[in-house]
Image 1 (cartoon, helix red, strand yellow):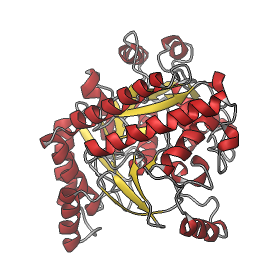
Image 2: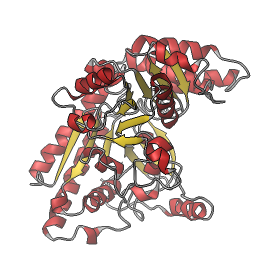
Image 3: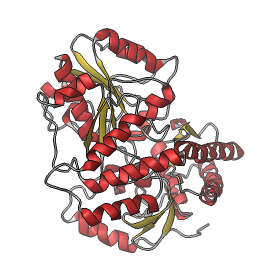
Length: 444
């Protein structure tokens, strides 16, 4: 284990340059300096391989952020990179359609239960918005009910505290409900709700047939059900949460994980709904048929199927989750912190009764970085994380949890931070999942 904090001189130099012209300095909030202990954590990465990354100063880390989700197989994964290189020889973006659009759509049709029809796009936020738009067109209704995080567009961000610039008339058309609280959905579901969009799970498992009840309410009310599968798709199962739980939504959206880092997104759904895109609903973009990303997606999905990647991710994640919780008990911290969630993606939580959770998290993050683990509060495992990576991580946790126990005993956790602690993204999040979701949004 490293006995010194990383030298981040070059990272900080890039940061100073960025601050002169970029507001904010990051294009993805979860990658920015507000989500890491500013003064300890690296700010810029230069390369990655398998489950490891190197920062611009040359420091190496085991990475559990994995590009904030898209790196499912690992950095520099040969089969995917070769597919990109092969397609690059022929071109990237063309003046007419490319056959990969058909091939990828046929593959998605075979593996995703609700994919009677498929649209290909670039980002998760845009397919979420496309799903909302076509739901409004199909139902003739205006309102949207949401549960989870669904991107930066007006219809969703209007429900959060960072809603400046969004007209009140738009804000009034969206509302949130609580996960695993069917009564909170019933209270807001009326005859003008076009769609209910939710993440099938975030970290908390559905209880008391929650997802089935959501679907039944939507069907009875003539409301379309949309699964936001940015995190669940291709991870919990190749066919996503709808395959895993056996529930088929009207529409579903995907982006992270299925192209191992290349920018691509999907909207899948019922043919009778999706056919409105033919003439009535407009949803097009110049780069929707960009070929490198489609080639990467084809290669990634084939690897996932052939090597049963979801099972491998679950096994690695389970080892981390169970190992962390054993160490927590060893250091008498079971009332302070725990690791929970589905094995393919777990979260570390900190109990506010022991102090500010962001301060506790910042302390753990700082000390994990010192020990060569890049950590944002989650375990986003990839296929090429090795047993050695996981054992190194657990050994680091063993040391860090001992330090945390000592600092808590001395009431000195905040004093031992060597930089600015992690910040929350939203000051409040309406009434959306006040347990797990607020904890995640602190590091989004």
